[in-house]
Image (cartoon, rainbow, N blue to C red; front, side, top):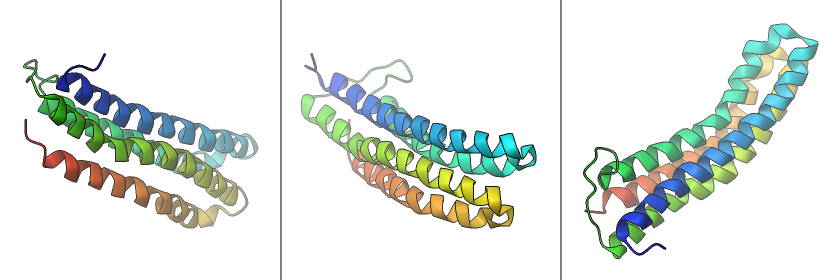
Length: 158
């Protein structure tokens, strides 16, 4: 099935965007469930809860960014696909793995952490900064994974 470097590179882009996007979707959903509960009791807290609900969405952005870079490098975006050997395709695939895997798991973890932050602001709205800091701590690992994926990608020549 994956008999060309281009196929492997496209698989890498799918891993980056698909896994990180799935983690974000789950995380945003978990936080959204908590937010809906809080807003059902106090509609005035919509803006505060929305900030925390949005945080887990960043992993999907990071994965999509990595996928875009890979698809651009091999010419899928732009219309001039560059034939690459299997080794180069594998390198691009493996460059996408860190943000795919870490984006998936950290998106879910960040959703849970942000849900806890939403519960915090249900009782103490002035503590939103603390809730955001808790969520941002999880974000750190997604940013580090994006950095590793990008550094690996940047040194692959097609």
